[in-house]
Image (cartoon, rainbow, N blue to C red; front, side, top):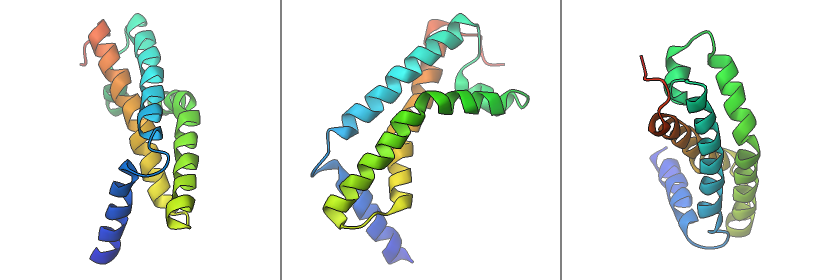
Length: 128
């Protein structure tokens, strides 16, 4: 089991070099731009930061997650597909779970973090 995890970690860490490395800059940048746009809108509407609201507001959680997914889905899917292409080039196989992890790290996490930070920086409602 540890050999499998070690191998998977080496494969994930190896993505920082080799073909298609430009995606490691472009995809988080696109997600951050989308996060800034959404964070500015949140601040304008006086909302609390995105992730905080998801954790605390049980009644609007589903709607917020759907809204966030609507914003970031294209970038996430592109991150997944480009990583699948990378895997075919380098490993001659597609590891779906690794591609999903890469999509989360390159697209979803930057969006969530930047959206919340933008809302906080611009002066959205204080977290309660």
